[in-house]
Length: 292
Image 1 (tube, rainbow, N blue to C red):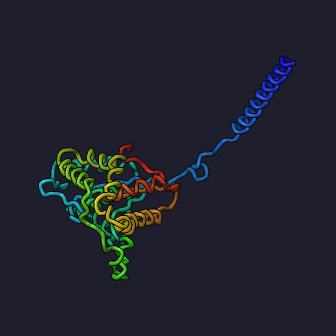
Image 2: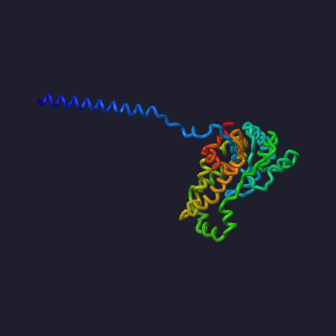
Image 3: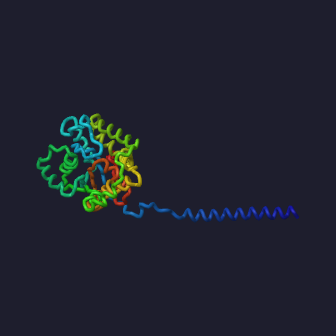
């Protein structure tokens, strides 16, 4: 009897196991018939193409936190940089922009300046808005330049309510001792020296690399950002991130349709954040500078 009982139990276990496996197969089979669509399939495939040309300021206005030493400054109006500028422009023209946006505030009269440039004016200006944006617009037959720069929310707050501004910014440790800020300074100082050692095209390509933008983005997360009680983080969000979000919105405003090919000429600090915004947006196709 024991043997018979054992056999019955064994056969039952085998049968149960077999049945369970069949059920699992059926469930898996059902799952396999359901395909998960890519998120991109919910958005239009046609997207406006954007090329962000991040640069250092060719005329060295001295408005950035870290200033370029005199011995490291180059002159784009003199050789060999003058010829290198031509090579840079010819390379960027491969993008075939239909619209060009520049880091200029409303009222800068970019299009009016472009008309004068086409008549032979402004050729002595070292500013990248003339040397790159206007030159390319002129040589490709474009008659409009778009001003897309913006002031930040914190600046408006300071002008409208200085008391609130003072409360929000009180306690920021602008001289916070952070070794990573020292690393950033060493990197930027080395870049300043490179401008005279390599061609403009090579340097601008390097500036617009994914790695350069990654660390350029991260540079703002050092130094005063680490002030106590989130003071640095709050200020950065109201000043730097807010300003770049507004710039992005201004570019959205000049985007007409998916056939647009928009070239944006900006200081490279802006380019690092704009890269992330364009890459994340369902409206745009971000074009790598090195892929031209």
